Image (cartoon, rainbow over all chains, first blue to last red; front, side, top):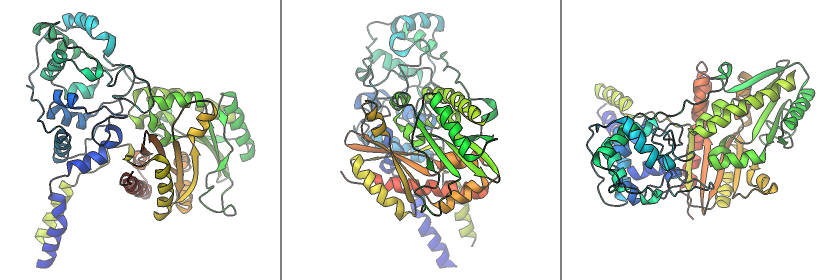
Length: 342
Length: 151
């Protein structure tokens, strides 16, 4: 028994060791922010940006993410793991991050609104959403700036950024996003007013899919026709909705030999390349759910027409622009499925 | 024995549950065409068959849209697909599984849906929940291998 205890202790040692920030960063962050913070889908973590933000801000950003703006929230990482990532990111420049007071700065939001409309609205937008979707440069999308103006109305930003940090950035500006320094343009009191206004900004309410399908993985409709007729109906309805249809496949095709393949499970794949190109520019990770397809399955004497719940699926990307498209696509796909099963 | 129980309790508290993601992603230093070749060799090592490869870039190029290497690999195990679709035909849009392979200059991004994102939609099927976790583990392990590829 004594040996067993020691064995347990030995096996557990790695779990109590300090987390490896580099390994965690490479696993959780590098796909979007690149191996050394060069950026990609995610914001470049450039020396200038790192010099402007506190460790607390980075840690809270990891925790809260940016809802609807690609950056996920990593709620399940332990405090030690988050700290390890922050330390690793800091090691790139070898300089400690600034420390800001957490106290709120008092200002007049009404006066701040006037100043915001004059100095900030051109880049940060009327409602503070920033320009376009996402938080950084993407693979193929043309942007006006190397780094997108921050979505000031985002709840993740609001929870992560202290007033003092926002004040510092307003005063200093940010070269990578062409943000001018306002040190000589605004007084301390005026900056306080702007910050008070920023704290009133709210993100727009997201559009949601149809209530009856919320929480379901797929749209499922029963067809009154046989499998072959239903397949043809789906194809006709898709063509009518301006989709290009690929040669049909069986669901099991490629997974087993052609003699044992179930030929009563047909997958109809379709695409609108113009839309696809547009959507891939919004979020290149869309391929994880491509291509669009409607399956027709004969099962237990029924013919079922099934498509992924695209409104639900689009939310996986934490990209508000894509979620909006998901809601629109839901309408189109449900119309096609209804037409095919009428 | 008490020490063992104590350690187990501590472990249960210390181990974070890593399920707050909806996509599994990795960046590889290697070029996309190479990553794609290695991935196709790696999938059978994990017991999966490559069902087919969707050339999204080819389709877009056909319509004169400029795009870099962009492919989607479909893969699966036929017995798993059959077992799950028999109980849940609504899972058919998610099968076979897939991984997108996307060129980013001379590097490659790999992205897949985290199968565990579907788990809350099947709260009463413990077997499926387990299967979703197994798929996640395999996808994560394969993507980790792709991340280690050299230029």
